[in-house]
Image 1 (spheres, rainbow, N blue to C red):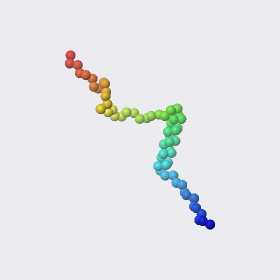
Image 2: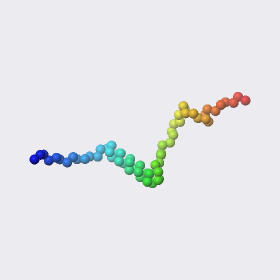
Image 3: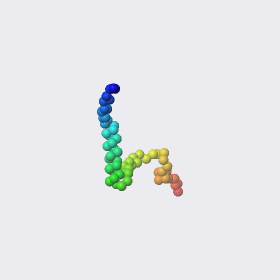
Image 4: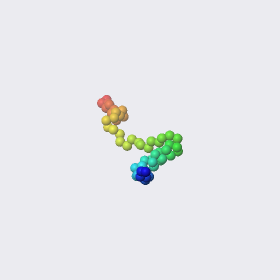
Length: 61
């Protein structure tokens, strides 16, 4: 007869807890609004991007 295996104690790490919370919050948000909601807005506009309003030609008339 062999040794009895002791059952492993499963522990929830902080990373697992945060991941589960974020996923649950995201699913609740989608359920409330009917679609994924994007809260990110453009905070900084790139100067390298072409901007027709900023790069107007100067008329010397």
